[in-house]
Image (cartoon, rainbow, N blue to C red):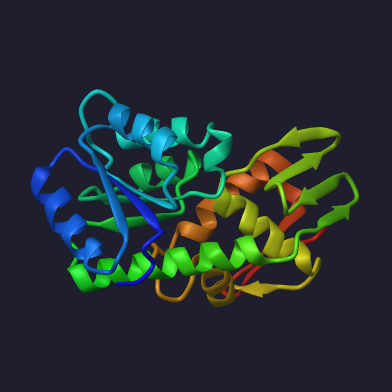
Length: 228
């Protein structure tokens, strides 16, 4: 058994999903906790402080979107990875998930081996980011604190959803450089995690809303760059 100290919280109102997913992840050596609705999931997250949370979207009492939003307000869970596991694949549902701080989006049904692979990938990348040397980047009115996962823009402090923060960190690491879409996906989401083609566009749109449309330039057919 390996990764015995890694804690995963499964939140889903379908007992079969909890059993199947839990069984396969337990076989990989992870410590598994379960909850059957969003409200219970938030309480379990506070108590257990898991490394990864797998959330269903449609649940009784509190849905996954609201649960994710509540969890992202808990300081001790700043570095917890959150991914949705759901049968819903509509754009609005995916966008809503990312808007409240989700890291990934996995669609049911999914083969156990693929799920395990995605979980391992998410945990590896999260561990690597935690171990990176912290630093503060200042670009004009923008200050990026990579250690505390926060930014200061025009003297106003903001806390961005994880993927928005990581995308901003990448683009501002070399202002003016055009980052290709493939490079962005590989660096921010990882080449083992399958995300929708519009994922980058959604995150860029949210960053433009917060930091100004002229801060980012689209290079059609290539990618994006930070220009301020």
